[in-house]
Picture 1 (cartoon, one colour):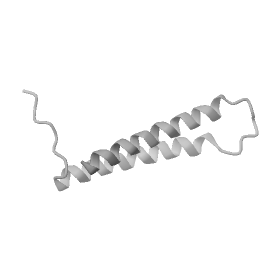
Picture 2: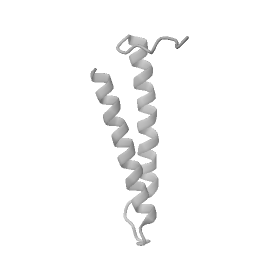
Picture 3: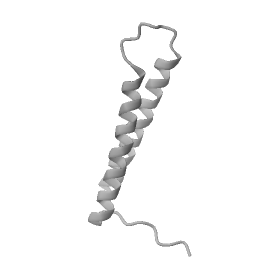
Length: 70
């Protein structure tokens, strides 16, 4: 159950960074101190960590995949 909570929190963090990057992209102020690529990079890193966490959890037996549908 803990793995699922961590994955959901990481997904929420990923969406948060996506919206932060969108806010910077749509702003009319060209002298933004923060770069949009910083937030997009965080999003990519978070998705890579989620994939690694899921693969580790499957290998360790913490979560089980759904059975075959047929």
